[in-house]
Amino acid sequence: MARTGGRPKIIILNMEGVRLIDSTGAATLRKFLESTHARGIRVILAATREGPAAVLDAMDIKAERAASFAEAVAMAR
Image (cartoon, rainbow, N blue to C red; front, side):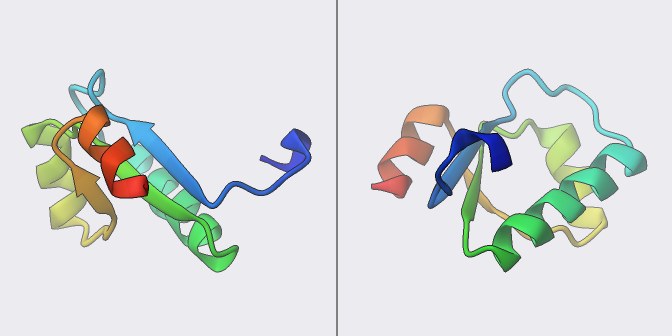
């Protein structure tokens, strides 16, 4: 993000291809979410599959979620 020149207001992470996430990946995602939140950037997780969603829930990782990328785009407007 630092190299883009401007700060985005919203980031949509398309999670559709993520079939599994372990605690290390979830912890990294948590740090990313905390970092973006601290900068006033909204993050929406799109199309998160059931397995990864369960891991994020178990680790109490809070993020806006959308059922699809299209829904996330609509939420971002």
